Image (cartoon, rainbow, N blue to C red; front, side, top):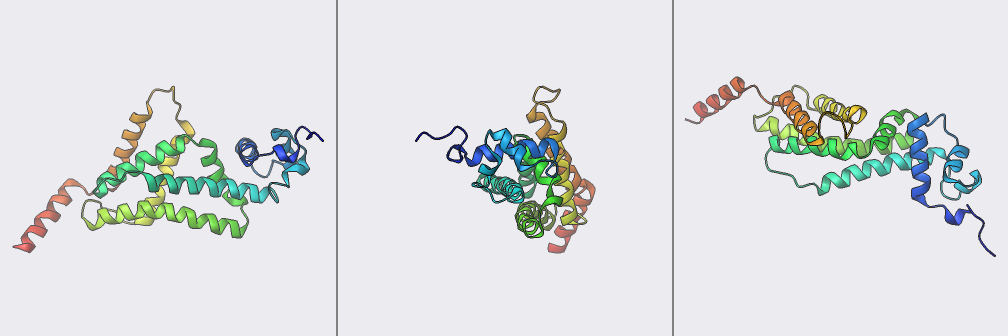
Length: 212
């Protein structure tokens, strides 16, 4: 017997996730029904449940997959020596990676409130793992005397929030190229945490005098 058009055998994970992501980003999780997602895919609503138990699971899968992609990509990034260069690399990586995925970024941050507690905690573990990468860079810079950071955790969250903002306004055909945006933002991030030059000179002088 020939398969019916739109039967569950033709549904793939990527098609369902792409439809859900598009609708969640455009209308918000709460406003989107499984029926709407099914219509976007082109199947009966009941067919979706052969792929995912419910809408909550679909949202969590989207957000988890996004965070895992971030962690994997950062793990594969070539990292230079020294906290100053590491911070620049992190800044450029974060902007470049997330600009290619504006819908994922929007859903990952705007729909956190709609995750059930267990899913919220699981995603929080992954987010903290990524934040820890930046915290480690800032702490290393602090320990080496090149960064002056009052609160590393707060500064980490502030820098990531600043970098995420690029996805809300950047346009490939706009006034600034991606390379220029990366350069400006990495410079701003550096200035936000770099020890003032006069203070750095005094620290080095004190260290030199202590060693004599």
